[in-house]
Image (cartoon, rainbow, N blue to C red; front, side):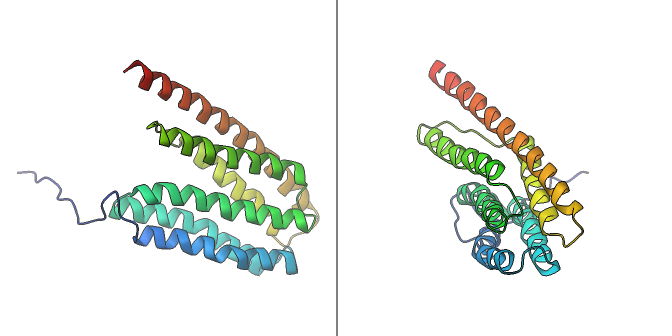
Amino acid sequence: MATTPTSHSGFGPSALATPANAVTIARVVATPVLVGMIVRDGATWPAFLFWFVLSCTDGVDGWLARRQGTTRSGAFLDPLADKVVVLSAMVALVAIGAFWWLPVMLIAGREIWIVAYRTSAGRRGISVPARATAKVKTVVQDCAVGFALLPWTADRARIASTVLWVAVGLTLFTGAQYLLDGRRASQVSSAM
């Protein structure tokens, strides 16, 4: 006879002190160290490896959250940490001349707008969940920073710039998706 899987004890949706949130907060706390490494030394193996670890821990906190129970605080903190980490690295790369300011400003403007938009929608009781394309966007942003930090030849700059512009396109595309999803959710909410 088949048995029903038992649920493991986890954290409730209102929990704040969770292992997943601890990893998320550690990512944010470690970000100034990365920025200092970039500004001081530019593209080096230590900076690249540190970036790689910070990027991978995004998956770790998600895995922990799914395993131990997702929380409202984690749903807010994780995407916010992603934005803080990636935008800090990008601004540091602009400061040393590795990235042009325009694509970074387009990404930063969209990211700030999305946080404000989702917060405003949430206050009205409208949920605008992330799509799979938003995760792809984050990975491409991470890759752009990673390529800029690899201590390669001059091709590194061209590859990093190309990947950065791909990230801009995905960033703006997913921003439009959020706007459309929010409008649809608002219309459904109004119709009820």
